[in-house]
Image 1 (cartoon, one colour):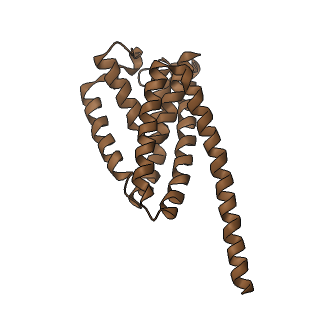
Image 2 (cartoon, helix red, strand yellow):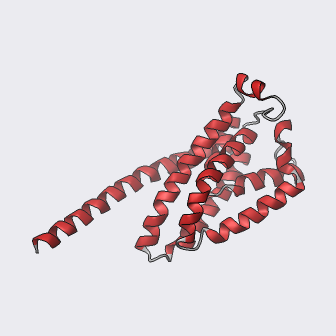
Image 3 (cartoon, one colour):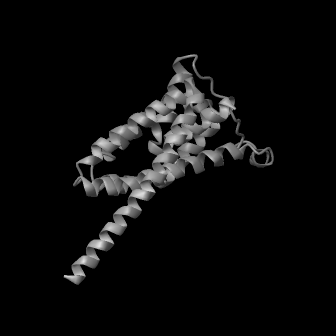
Length: 205
């Protein structure tokens, strides 16, 4: 159960920032005893992989804080974040993968299940983030983009750490994300009704 919570927290974290959970897992596995990656995921602790993840993270951190550029980045990340979520869930839940050496075994042994779960979790969080950002930009004339992005990065980092060290607390984050999702939907409906009412009043005038 704790492994599932760890994988869920890391996948949700990847939905906010694809590279933070992967980089954190690789660093902890390489330089500490806090995390031991299963044999199929040892490559995450490779020095070159960590360097590439660090560079991609730096690009992501800058691009996501610039209005308009953040929207383009979100479009590109529609593929990257779910993929990272699948990898994070698979590694975080200690699942083994033999995709390269024996694809038949990978599918017949259901080792693909945690990867798919991670993809879906990260995709859901990513879509929520992508839908919220244009609203934030529009209502703050773009000034809210760096603030929102910084908050998302901090949440991603904190959720990754909690998922690894205190996985039970991941439930709190997931409940919070669900609550935010429903609040956001209600907020959008309310704003849509306000705009429709304003247009109707304009026509009457």
